[in-house]
Length: 631
Image 1 (spheres, helix red, strand yellow):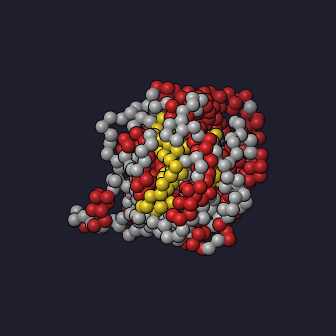
Image 2 (image 1 turned 90 degrees about the vertical axis):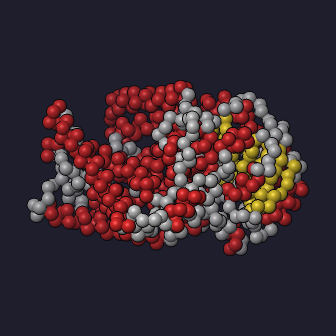
């Protein structure tokens, strides 16, 4: 991959918010942070209490099991396993771990006792029923076909199903955006999209099988050093080979898409709420990018109810611009989505570029993005958000994160038309497609992803071009990082609920595969920190009881696979300095798990009336949800 052109504004620009007034340091807080209808503002101590309660309950349950086993009151399987083929011992307490987590999670929800009990029943009941079905299948296979399924495989299968049960129960119970009406006619995926998905999948399975047989010694050596593990080397190889092959396809698709010159008129909309400290640099970078672009560029700065000098500073920057024309608009109702809709409604150009007020575009960003729209099927294009400066822990780990997510996984998803969302920090959109999709959704987290999902449903393609790069602000404080990540991780549930009628339907790869996988991955990420706590209990407190367990598979979930992927992506992007940040990135993944759990706990769960009162009149909250759910 070739190195993209340098940024229009140098990384060492005066953008450090550490030595500015508190009002500027906290400018990230807005009405968009936690939409009041669908979220509850809960402090860190809620997540802390949840993890402490989990550790305490897990310790008590494990201690009780050990006592019962040693006194002969409990079978030596030591887990919620109904059948162990050949008397095999269940050395991995997977189901106990998940049950303990489900109990503590349910009791930590911000709702009444009836709703907590109902969520608890669904989560634990679903896990136990799944375990019973899996164990029955194992018993049947052993009795009829003499096929013995290891009890560890039964437990791992239960764990995988539990990761699917968790988001389903959350979506069913949480107060979330009402689903969009089902389209009268879906734009089904093309044959080539299916081939570009199942082709890598089939080839990955074949290559993984050949590698496992040919390089068996290498695979097991990697397992000894905790480089691979978890559900086994076969799954590891298949998963990574799918992404790698899709990345190769995506790279070819993106290069072909950008090779045709295309420079239509562009309207750039910049929503700005209290951005006096950044707005001049943002407009200056847009002006430089407009100078490199051969088509006309018009700037629309939307002052979104600012209380500082944003309007005055923005106007001076517009007056100084040399390569674009611009106007400033006033949107007196707070909210980024509201400001975007206000500005877009006044844009006359056929293509819209959305730029956040703290973003500095690369000088080639508009040039490269516009070329993709030579294809009338393309609806939206995005790029890679690079931290504006790399000097703090958060900026260093963010560097690795954006390379992995946006320069690798997003390109791979482009290969099979599976882009779920293009980051709203910089997005170029076809205005006619935007008119068909409807206005940007207000009052939710993840309005940029929501828009891409609607474009996908209409049959438009969303692309991620790794050569399009732009500088973005990185949180300097724990509070800013927390606000950002809670907002991002809540958006998975907001968007999934809004598009639940398109999930698992073949109108787009995003709906049939990527968004469901994002829900599954969100559950996995939320359980990562509790899993580490449980592993510490098992290995530190009960090493003799679970003597068959090994630490390598657990550590591989934290260090092995993520480290290998991060190193490979840094090398592919020719970022040798970023290799130094990989250890910090691995630590941050645990912090990210903490934020993911906090995001789910911050969802709004309506109180559930007792059974004898559920036939009564609807509450005002329910009526409000019905009336305001779809905008």
